[in-house]
Image (tube, rainbow over all chains, first blue to last red; front, side, top):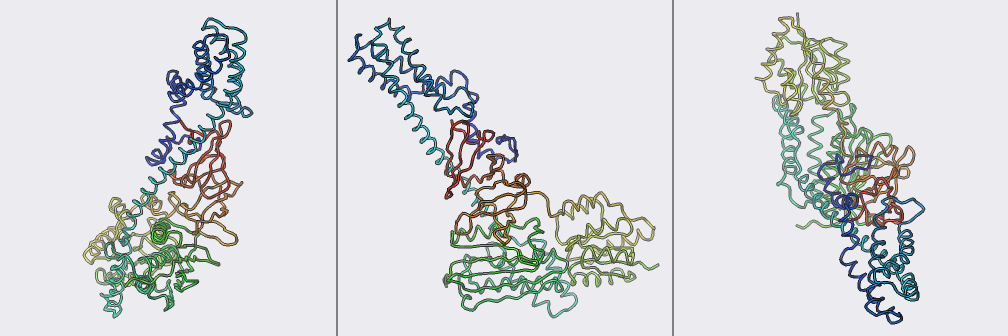
Amino acid sequence: MPTNGDWAKAPGGPRASAWFSLFYSRTMATTVASVPSSFRRIFAWPRLRFTLIVSASFGFLTGLHSEAALPLDVLRALVLGCGILFIFGWLELWPRRLPRWLPRTVLRLIGIALAIPVVAAFAFGITGGGTGHDYGFLTVVALLFAPWIAIGTILRQRDAFAREQALEFDLQRSEFERRESDARLRLLQAQVEPHFLFNTLANVQALVDSGSPQASKVLTSLIAYLRAAVPRMHSQTTTLETEVELARAYLDLMQMRMPDRLQYAIHLDPAAARLHCPPMTLLTLVENAVRHGIDPSETGGRIDVDIWIRDDRCVMRVKDTGVGLKNVTRGLGTGLSTLRERLKLAFGAHAHFALTEIEPRGVCAEVSIPQREAAS
Amino acid sequence: MTVTALIADDEPLLREALVRLLAGAWPELEIVAQARNGREAIDQFEAHRPNVCFLDVQMPGKSGVEAAQHIGRRAHLVFVTAFDEYAVQAFAQGALDYLVKPVEPARLAETVLRLQERLRAAQPALDTEALLQQLARALLPNAPQTLRWLRASVGTTVRLISVQDIDFLRAEEKYTQIAWRDDTGEPREAVIRSALKELLPQLDAAQFAQVHRSVVVNLSAISHVTRGANETADIHLKGRQETLPVSRTYLHLFRQM
């Protein structure tokens, strides 16, 4: 992330620049504005139309009191109005930087107040002059009303700006969320890690070769695990009982592979057995505990899985005594982030997920979801 | 002269399997030591000085590659790995001896033949230092990448906060204050013991923007931005009272028109 603030060239990739392109293109428009385009901006048609209508009305009203002909008064008022509009618009763009003590709004109002007598004199000059009474009257009327109209315009502009920006953020956010869900879908195609698969198969082969009676049991566990973990094979909903069986199959496999380093215990409250659970929830927690807690540790550790009902919510807790959060390694998070997303999709704000460190070492992961009977 | 060997693998069944396979492929080989991790492999190597070392690449604590770096050219090395594309590719390119789990007897026989030839010719072990260094770096777990979780103190507990739940981060001397949402969407605060400067490069640039010397904000937490007087602006966040300042340097991110 750049610190010089130059975001459009940031090494954030195309996504970053897409995100900012809206802001940036607008910025470019002001900073590199050439003179003609500044004029176009200052005399933008809606503004000009508004100014002409207001000026003409005022010209008409002052004309009722003036000593000159009515069209002349209207013309003078129109010239004055355009002059004020020019000052108003010009001071919005120039100077580009202002000292801290001088807000732009104040500058614009002062500019307008100072310009009115001058522009009014100019208006009288090009219309062949007039009486001092007419000049004074027009100037005073303009001084009385123009600043208020200017303030009104500035406030409206701010409002519109805030609204537009809120809308823009919403648009970008929804775009962002759409991309997020795309990414999530890809991640959802949970994969059996080849490293895990081949290592486990090597173990199975070792058991078979040595004629161990354990071989068949281990193969059963592997088949149970693969059935659930291979994408397109897992169903949309499962019961906690099924989830526990899956976690047990995985832990059995891992315990066969590292008998000296892994102990585990699973406790499932029978009352929770038939409850609904998004597939792979418990397994993700358990896999994470093995991969990032137990496996990196030379001495290994213990995993405790507890599932029970608390305040009408179903709580799944996986505690390990592995290396803890300090040794966060590559890949931590992919599984857990996906799980978090899945829970959010399924339960909105009603799913809770917390990861905490436990003393003296290890991690406690706790998921709680609303208690819901599984559809049978 | 009897040829001696060391086998290092953290999985006991696989150690036994390799011992059994070697007994068939190379009956004269004497396995003098077995190790369960890289550290033990190094200790056992120093204690027995075997001629050949079979090292599993992925072991807890010190990896097989790290153990190999320690052993250097003092023994002939054979790496053992379960499906690990990167490592296998590197081994093949570097002409290193390697076996892929589950080990096939035919492939093991080839490896044994090569080792026996080298031992007979009294060839020194391959110089693998440069390659191993490169491998060790590649297998290192802490390659810089986008952060997904932050370890933070919340009251007296330490927990992991998903970066997606963070509204903004504010530098406070050596610490960083984190404003985040808990599961129920309630705004909360936490402190983390890293400087904002160190965190910044690890955050996803598409999601987080620095808006002030000491403030980084999650763009999806912004509700709107109001322009203040004088080239400043304030960021209003969704569901939070406080506003965040945007300093001049970063104002162009939000400038309108």
